Length: 411
Image (cartoon, rainbow, N blue to C red; front, top):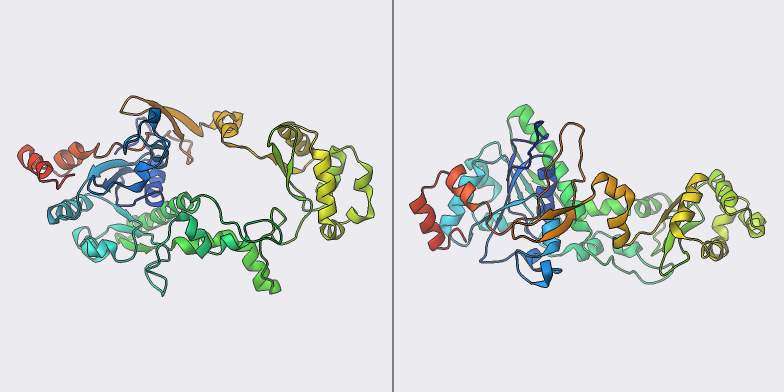
């Protein structure tokens, strides 16, 4: 699906991707590449509707695999063709498509593509310089290679959940599959590196991408604390992950469930905070004189600061603290994001009209460049690009095309 209506071509214009990825992580790889100009075709089937297509909310409250607003945002930029890969004829068509592509993406478990007869060994015979990204949970090798997870359980496996929660309490796992879009964007970067190598050498490659290992990067401070200090600590709430600053947390502001985050990591920032809050008597206490003192008395410090913060509007206070050199920000909820002047100015969220006729808000292009502007389209209708791919790209005549549809090969 071409993604550029501009005079100046996008950086990846001319790159074609067969995206076998499913749920969220794999399609986000396609989304990111599409925002940069790649032509991306999500390979799916009505024989097994992708679970991401059945996630609410639905347009106008009417359920349906083409009406999931979450899907339209998460799969934006991907096209769609339908192939029932349970059938040999569909597998052959998939190979024909790969022969016309530069990149293949998949995020099934190890061996799934091989079982379909579409593993790298096969596809590299079809297209010798193909770049194939495989991104299973724990990579293609090792004792955990066959483990099954979703985005939320992946953060547990990667160790992130062990440090998420209230101070001194039990771990509280993250409540959403944040690892999926994270891995999708990182996977797209891996594709770009491999494509650059191919362009330089003429050689394709199979990328073994472990989602677990990528997510483990988010535990970096805790890992370094263990490696250097031998400490394995549990959840720390919003305190600094390696005790390098205080105050450091989120504090309730005036209004209904309004909060502000404040982080102070050195004496200069502390003095800025004290000045911003009009130098209250408690801030002059010897308990808070130096960074080590503030860390030692962090509970008392947070209590005093919380009592002061509670009387102010979160956004006004954040602006005031920023003026004094303090890292502070309002804790935005989703409605704040949609109305935020910064996001409006950058087109972070855009309103589009879906081919079925309803309007919806989806993500704008989070990758921007100065030369050209991406055209962002909502996640596709199932099979919306069948005619183009099978009739035009693969050159299948009308009679055979209709028979493949009747036989539910293209399905």
